[in-house]
Figure 1 (tube, rainbow, N blue to C red):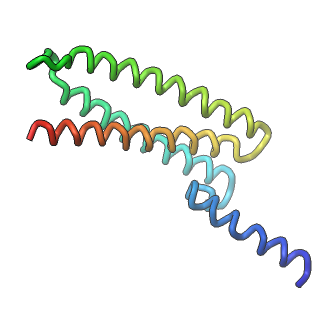
Figure 2 (figure 1 turned 120 degrees about the vertical axis):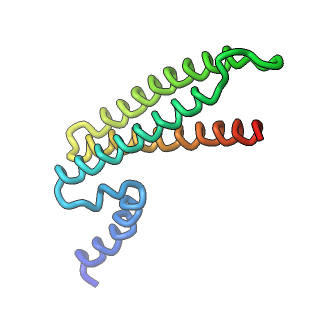
Length: 135
């Protein structure tokens, strides 16, 4: 087997893994990859915002039956702001690490998207527990 074939076969699993991590890496040009990553991130951010607002809306405005809803809502807002700051710093680190790479923007948007998807999942669990508790 020649060296080129061997190198190609060695990189094949890496390419397959990269596409699982971020489907936008399968796009053609860097511009298409960037546009895809940015759009995927925007969708994830919009879903997160929708779930976050739904959770805030579901928490009563006044304390009831000894449950400190006012403090819970306040803490949720603080947690969301701090989470946003963390994500910005974390993904900025990824961006700095990829400085000079054509994948810099793709990696940044992938980072923010993955964080948003995880946070959305966490808030959805909180939301579903609240729904079950009301039933």
